[in-house]
Length: 462
Image (tube, one colour):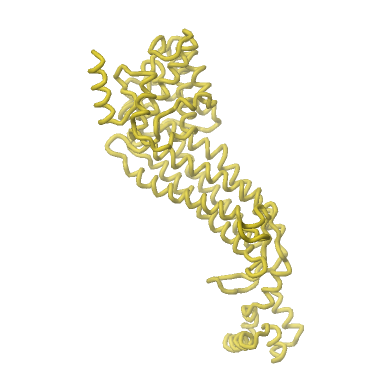
């Protein structure tokens, strides 16, 4: 084939498929960079967690293929070394393919195959690149298809992010909230419903509610993990396992479990595992729920800390960023606002994931790069936001007990405690009189001699 024919075929495949490497073609190594330079550039790259999970799969696959007698030990050792380096992030700069690519993730899979083959050949011969002695497809990709290995890498990356980062961070937030609930357990504050004064309660009770939200978030995440830890590996192109050794998937998945400490298992049904991405949609829905909880907690904290003199001011937030750009002495609720923005991004990611999850057409979901980017970003955002909220805000949070008590005394809702003894209508009249005169419920009740003072004090101190 002459150079002009090669160029024509290359352009046709770029236009029709948007891939950087044609699995049955003759372009390897330099083709990845060449295609990346000519293809759409969004400025986004596949998430490193996805790449590192993919490298781990290649690492376990090379081990397995060697043990099965399918791969020469020398070639396997070179691939294993290259994959170990990629797992550690050593070759991250070599993954030049844009995030928005062919929906199977074939471009990134081939990018990985080429990077590992190039490095393995360098280890064996001293020269980078080429297809011999290690071939990107025949050796690095042995027993795999992009259609099963890329969703597997997605599940592995997401599960690792949850188990290693998000769950510990959320548990840390829960523990900090429990600590604050205990610390504030004797501080009375006015409750609020409909943004209006309600009856008194303890500040610690509010934080116990926050802690329960965090605890339920942990429970919800745990319920999604069994589906997330089912892996598509072994299905190859369409789910029937063509060209994969019967023991390949089980052995590789065992290696993934051993390496990560997470109980991965082969998909119950490979056709479901590749045609749909319901487990990712489910996981994202749980992440969105956690994000909603964080908005509730953060909003309440910043509102309770508003003021400090012209707002509610029941909480004193740490002065992380004292002073605004124009107003000296002003302290903004930086951390709660940052957490809220992270949460909103997670909610937006979930909307995209929901739409992408619907793109399982026949035997393959064709939005894997988008799913990977969004769900991994959501996990990382929530893990970082929860730790930031716990360590940078809650740890230094102080209650203003004097302000809390003052609001209770001024509240008209105190009259609620008198209803069982004086009736609803008379209590309402008392509240109206207190409002019109600017006096407290206690003062009006004392003046009108509603009840003996000792009994009145007892009732109004609930």
